[in-house]
Length: 517
Image (tube, rainbow, N blue to C red; front, side, top):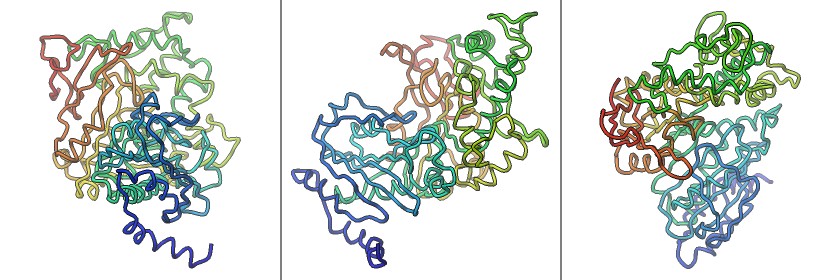
């Protein structure tokens, strides 16, 4: 590509976007197909196709991102303009995006969809779910198709794409496509992501505060280097020495003992610990008297559980590196403690990114110098811990964070730590209450599911907050068994908790109020 062409690509979009106006009436089909010739910076549009109502067929790679809205069956989808593109902001970038825009009845808004794990796929289900609500919606594979961290090995630009650049570039180009297709920009822009998607949302607020008006950041893996160190901490506790290994068959035993000790602390015995920070159960109470047995823990297993619940600390300074898992999370421990190897995202990160050594063994990990090395090498790329959200809040941005107390993969107190850091940086919780709220979800696992009510309409909550200035004082969540709602409960903005009134069904949210405990 010659210099003249490069210059043309840079300066032409503004002219084209002003000239190419589209509507969503009878000319929608031609308008969609015309987007194939739209010139955008470092963007190659590979498809611009009007998909008739009910005609979309899902691809095998269309996995659902954690916590994202889903839509099935696909034959219920309305007609939409489907645009796919490849973005190359660097010489080693290969970022795939999909942008879906309703051919009619657009709600006037744009939604960006987050990823899970190492990304590497575009969530077709999440795109369909948002389209079904009238959104123009976009998702990206973040620049690679690998399901592990091998893509980052000796490819620093691809790592940058995964860390933050792909999401920002997707957002910019998707909004340009929306503007071209409808002839106007979105009236409001939202982000919805959990786990990796939660980290992506926080990175957007920190680094690109003008990209989104409202951000839903569920279970954010925002302190990535320290979170992955905590994964290795659990692996050291349970997998490094076979005597400390806890068979999965014993998880239910531990969980029952925890509930027996702490379930009723909130005044309601319902199989859910409302506030695990008040639960001080010690697994030594179920330690075997002598030989190992299915209904008890060995001394080594007891010590392993204490390390799982306990925070990771620097062995030299004693400073906390990352919080531990909470009482109530036991049924999901297989993710970090089930073996035979640690959670792969942790080993991949240190093998491919930090040490660049394919033979690296997790047993060699040093919780002092190796954590410091990871922090230095990351230099704020994957870590999204910057507490200064003033620019995002000043322009009216709203941040909704949620995290399940029973999360067995990402320690819940990490979200509390980040929320507190932002509040402290900006003058206290009262100063950020109109812009940021954290909801800790009792009984919820990693992004979805669990023993407690964990189904709630996040998009409606953030829409009401951004568009109508109705900050969420509570969010009613439901628990579903066999397709039917069997319990509702209010989720409360941290540090408030749902307190039972003392009368009426404990399965009805109307009988609870958010209060300080």
